[in-house]
Image (cartoon, rainbow, N blue to C red; front, side, top):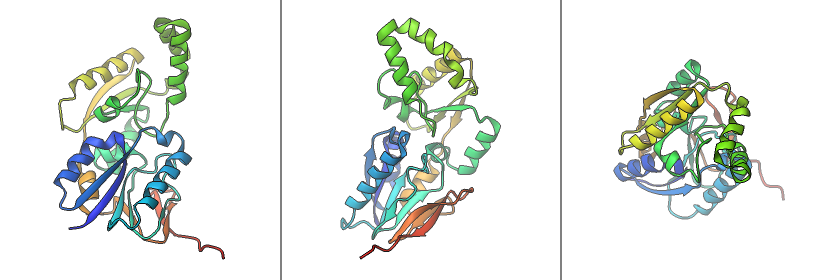
Length: 251
């Protein structure tokens, strides 16, 4: 039995807490607020800070509940403890249980807005223009909030519709159901958002296999292990990540 620390985005809270509770290892969970990937440099610095703080605390490995996330994990350094990262571009691959399944979904319908219960219940405010994945809507949300303050909600809705070119290439709202709790309220909210925008709605079953494998230490080809004194490099292919030696410190 090993002791791991998993540092993850809070939108993965439910599946990670469940996987930790049923893992054969002792796993501590450290959640970071959602939306850090909107500014990759902030995500990278926050993660590196957590990694550095975990030194000398008795962990055999540090696990990341993140993918590439807009290059926010690129360059992270494993100091003295191995760092394990799923080979996914973002959290959707984790939630679907297989990066290949995510690629298939993307090939079939690239214009998809993704939703899950964890993400929606942790969204501040109205969440009207929020969805999961690597594309950020924070600036659009700020614009919408500004319109509401200036012109009222009805007029703000109209103005955002007029400015709707930002969403013209989307055609589907997909809700990933992990089957952990009753998520019907969030499904209905997703359906309503899809209807308002003229998108089709689809419900997909999630899969916990990558969460379980991550926390159980079953690191197959869907994961990369960055050994001590190495950094996270980029592969620019389906492998996503590579192992890079840390540059020696200058005297």
